[in-house]
Length: 501
Image (cartoon, rainbow, N blue to C red; front, top):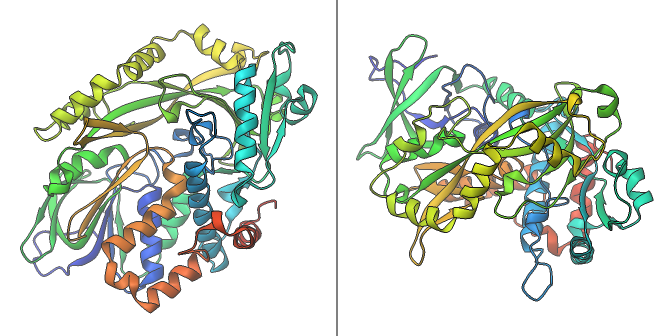
């Protein structure tokens, strides 16, 4: 049903979600699982669910567990390895698997194989200094129960058995090393989002409107949000009312957050980063690689640009991608406008934008270099991971658009963040998710935090606490401190999701 502003007696909706990606779908399913009586209305400006960042071609498809992503384990000045962020990311993805497992067990996700499969996660480096780093990283990670079973090798023959494409034609005089975690996953977040959306739309009290663009917000003294929505098919605008609003529109979240007028939105800006993949077209080559192989990112590059040679399963077909190659566009969405960046600049965020820009000139230089790359440059980067790559086997594809968060900082004026940022109003009646990596993999952890922050009294109730623990058995506990619990929840998740142990 499309909202009609001519009907002032239309009931107030409990929840409005903006955007049809993995975040909104996760929140809707979670809220309806906690309280089936809640009413929810969703609005998406495109004509399909999961058509932007959640689409399989627009993200890495990695179940980000810090198994292979080297940027989550920085080396300290004293040479030791900090695994705190790796522990956090790994735990967040375990929450996602537990939630999806519960939905599968309760019949809400009937076919886990349509969106998740097991695939080894590997890190690969070369050069004596990088080999030593990877060795220390492996030793440090084995202190955490979340990384038990991780293998390490400096033996070229062993690594060649794991990832033959990476080793064929490589100079054997250069030292190499790799780690392998066999319980890594490949996730089609587009397929998952569509499955979650289809389920939640089948429930009473839920309506979802495609081709509808949110234009404005007003928060009235009665605590209710008035949201102006335009039907892009007819051009007609209408107003709907809600007690709580979630802005989960990917790169489009920042402009909408600014329109909300909440004080907490002041000072936030965005820095858009685009991406491209090289996609393999040779079935014989695709068939010979079965791993997600991540390397060290270039100095000054954003985390989303970590190079990886990546076996994927997309819409029932095996694919092989390399990249992503970063770039710059003033669009905030892949299907956005080139004026997005300029229209996001306001008096409140000019200072943070300028300060963050001045301190990240290296990033700007890196992105310009990526934009100016020739086909030969891209092939050279590919051959660092696949030495015998034939350029004729690969074609360039446009990947997703990400908007990195810039926010004000008392000491530095403005800082550029590469993670995600949840912005909520003081009364908890509106929330917006900004940022990018690791994004989709941590959707469940982010939405659990949102629900507890924006629905605090209900979240503390015995009923909701019990349901939290049914959906996510480790809820309220820290897996990194409990090897037995880690093993228990992993076994449950892997059985329910039909993953290899």
